[in-house]
Structure formats: C-alpha cells, structure tokens
Amino acid sequence: MSLHLDARQRAMLQEMGVTVWDPAPAAMPTTQAPAAPSVTAVAAPAVAPSRAPDPVRATPDTRAAAQTTSAPPPTTAPTAPALTLHAAQALYPTADPAQTPADLGSGWLIVAESLAPADPLGGDAGRLLDNMLRAMQLHKHPRVFLAALERPGPGSSAQASADIPATLADTVATLKPAMVLVLGHVAARAALGRTEPLGRLRAGPHQLAGSPAVVTYDPAFLLRSQDTKAAAWADLCHALALVRSHSAV
Image 1 (cartoon, helix red, strand yellow):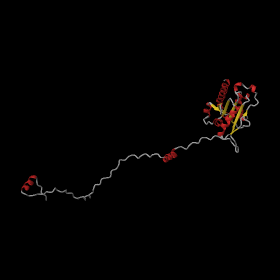
Image 2: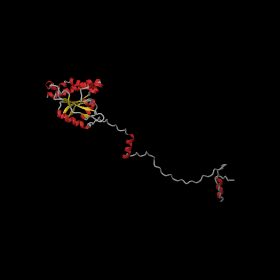
Image 3: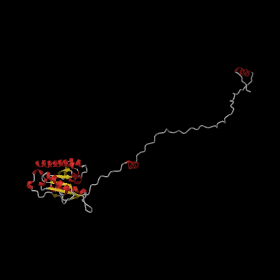
Image 4: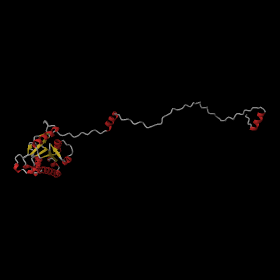
C-alpha cells in the first residue's frame, strides 16, 4: 500500500517529527518493453553542400579528341586535270592582212581545251569554234592563234598544271595579242590559276601577261547547253568592244 497524504497531513506529521516518503506511483503496464541500450550521441561529420562538378578544362589532348569525334571529315578540293599545252598555232594563216579590219587589233590568242589539237577546227566542237570566230570577222585576221590544251591519254607525258600559266605568259609576251580568249573552266584554271565558277570568271576583268583576257564557255559545253550560246556571244562582243576601245586610243 502507498500512503496518499494531502498537504495538511504532511505538515502535521512533519511537526511531530515523522518523516514520510511517498514515492510517485510507478506506471503499471501489463508488459514492460526492455530498456533501450544506452547510446552515446556522436556528432556526424560536417558535409559540404553539394555543388555542380567543375567544368573540364580543355587541354590540347581533349581539344584534339573533340575535333576527332565531332568535326566533319575534311573535304578534298577537286584536283586539276593533267594537261598538255601545245604550241600556239595560227588558225587562219592564209588570211590577207590587207583585208583585216583595223579594229580587230594586233592579234588574238585563244586558249581552249581541244579534242584534236592537230585539227582544232575539225569535229563538231571545232566547227562551232570556227563559226564563233567567223562571226567576229577573225577569220580575216592572220594573227589569230590557238594554244590548245589536251588531256593526255595513257602512257603520254603531261605538263604540270602549275607550269602552264608561266608558259602561256611567255607565249603572250611573244605574240603580244590585243585580246586573250579563254574558253571553258578547264582553260581558265590552267591559264589564270583561278578556281571560281565559270559564271563568276565571265564577269572579269582579267589580265594575262599584260594583255586583257575574257573568259567564256567552251564550244563543247555550248553543244551540250544550247541555251548558253547567247551568253557566250555576249562575252565575245564584250571582247570585241574592249579591243576596239584600245585600238581607238
């Protein structure tokens, strides 16, 4: 049994010198869970706040690897065809100088790829070239020369394309033509060392060893593309106008 004393009763017993200890009533559970073992709290180590990983610094090795994996494969520029440059030959050697119109200048040099350098005015392309020159009255001029470029066949030696401009420059310096007609993209690349599209090269102006030069379509291309003949004729008229303007000075 436990004593349940109020405050007054406790005071009376204290006055009589009687010490009363009344422990607090214990909990009366039907079943008591085992006491948890004593655990000493240990402070957790401080953890730095999470942050984004540092960016990887580009090094020469990483840059080279990135270029290897992401860069597109380099494009290879088209290789110029191997060509043989034949010595300049007069196309109308029997023309009478007395019948040559004065406004055609001192002479003309045609630079073109020819399928038959021995007979440059033969075949369909040669006949078209002859018609173009006759329309300009150049068949009356004994100093109309053709420097024929030929793609060599198997087993033949071809002059390096890098040497052709220098050789043509020597030819121009010797003949001193009033105009150089460059026919076709292959001839323009060999004579002028230019690789732009033919449409841009036609816009000119050009110089070859001090002589004015005009670029236009070659006869073989005109046979395949009939609708470009008018543009080619405009280029030829432009060349005639340049020669006449210099002759009039």
